[in-house]
Each structure stands twice: as C-alpha cells, then as structure tokens.
Length: 256
Ligand code: PEP
Image (cartoon, rainbow, N blue to C red; front, side, top):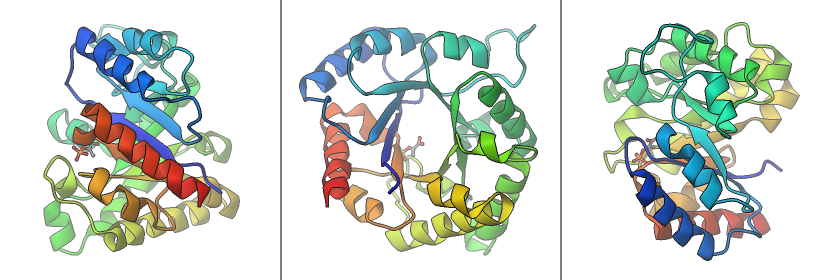
C-alpha cells in the first residue's frame, strides 16, 4: 500500500517567528506516532528555523522553488544544492502560481526537476489545468503534455523518487474543490500514463497528491479515492488545528 503524503504549501505567508510559533503548537499536538509522510513547505527564509523547531519529529521540510541552473549570476534566486544544504529534503516544482506569475514553462519545469534530482531533493511536481482548459474539454491533453514535457529524459530510477501533485488551477485558493470523482478520474489518467511511459511497477508505487482547496471537510472523501495518495494543502495548512486534523484523517484511513 502507498503511504499517504500530506503536505502544506505556505506560499508567501508567515515570518520566522510565526513559523516557530506554529511549529511549537504543532509539535505539542503529538507527532511521533504518525505513519503518513508529512512535509511543510515554508518560505525559504524560515526553513532552518522550522527544521530546528521540529527536530526529532517525523515532519520533513521542503522549499517552494529552486533555480534551474546550478549556480551563477541569478540575483535573488536559490539553487537546488543550497536548498538541500539548508536541510530541506523536498522541493515543489511547477506550482501553478509559478507557471502563471513567473512564466515557468514545461521546459523550465523539466530543467528544475533534473537539477533537483541531481541535488538529492525529492521533487513534488505540480500539474493541472485552468478553468478555460477544463471547460473546453482540454484537461486530458494539458495533463498529458505537462507529463510528456515535464518528465522528458527522466529515467525510471529517477522517477521513483518523484511525487506528482494534481492541482486544478481553478480549485487553488478559490474555495472550489474538484469532486472526488473529478480528481480520481485525472489521478487515474496520470497513473496510467506513468505506467505506459515508464513501467507498471513505477505507476503502482507513484504517489499522486490532490491539491486545490483541500480542507478538513473534504479530506476524507478525497483521500478515500483509490488513486489519491495524499494532499497538497495551501490555506488550510496555515492553521495548525486544521492541518493536524487532516493528518489525523489520513492516519485513520491508513489504519482501516
Ligand atoms: C496550493 O497552494 O498548492 C493549494 C492547493 O492551495 P489551496 O489549498 O489554498 O487551494
């Protein structure tokens, strides 16, 4: 059985001191017997404070972005090696906000993915369609293109490390959630594509997260779908009680 993966994308929220406060409250709730993978993605400036405050808990930390080159004259950017050196084990790649506001194309996503893998980071690659694309019946084409271009020249061994997050853009931060059936349909397409492009074993083991207004109220129905292996949570991950409740739901389903 695939282990659940519950992740929180904090985007550009919380200062270092607010991060430490969140983590203190989070750890007193009791994190040690959690069997799901839990990863938080704070702004990079707070990564080390988060790691320190969550020391000796199973919670892992990731960065929200890296540059596609190893190093150089890219003022303001952070490289994959720097992120790894900060203690991060994960990185988000191709989040729709980066595709939309920072012009990240599938080609850039592919470069970032390669450099993340070379730097020992576990990439969580985000894909998903816009409302226009969904309404004009192009969802499947968009997903297939993002997989084909985003995972170009990635070997099966490298792919074993990758986590995919399906995040329909129209559901991110809007309060609109894909129905479990809508999400399951796309997760199934993603898994089948990975089976065809790589191998049945890889497809079986691949973890596919759903993201888009996931919250306490809908976590159970989403996580109960066959091909939904976890959640990438924005807004609700900023509330320590809600994030913890969602983790408890994943734990309850694991024990079923
Ligand atoms: C996200 O930022 O990846 C996300 C899914 O946000 P939200 O849960 O707020 O829709």
